[in-house]
View 1 (cartoon, rainbow over the protein chains, first blue to last red):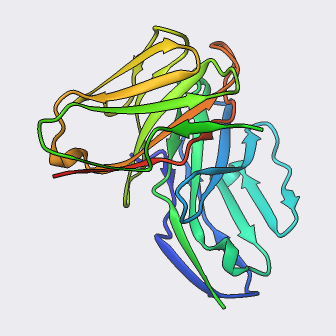
View 2: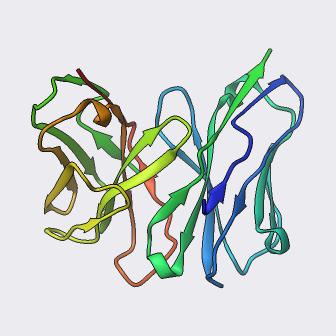
Length: 115
Length: 116
């Protein structure tokens, strides 16, 4: 079974719309870490956020916000007032204590923001 | 600032050739990783290394080998390239050493490899 599921393959929005990217994970560990990365057309993965399993507080960073809910095993990412520069592939990833520092990635969500 | 570099952005090779992909990080990180990225599959771990001369298989090591002779450099080797190894290859590094979990991995720009 997939450990990290990003069910949305591709999303298209118009600039200034809000958009939420879904991430559902599966783990038996009580200690784990969740990540979001952005991959713009240039190809390099850019780190956005890291969250450990004991910290369920939502986080906001400018137009970005993350909603971590252990009850539903989800770690969703919302972009408020989207911009064309937000167009990229976004990956959610899981690191489990049992598997050391290895990351398991979701398939990614392609976000297209049109002007 | 975090810096991971990869020797080539684009590479075209013939079936059966030996291919070397180089990755260098300047952050004194102990951990280094090689992934391949394919549409619809996300990133999959090929090999990783927690220290010089040390390597461990990831999820898809078949057809690949690695070398880590110096802390800052981690090479991925395709012994005999095949068309199904056409992909995007991404290198990453992280700190600290083994025993601490969940540290952030920092990625290089990737190498797009085409095997004809």
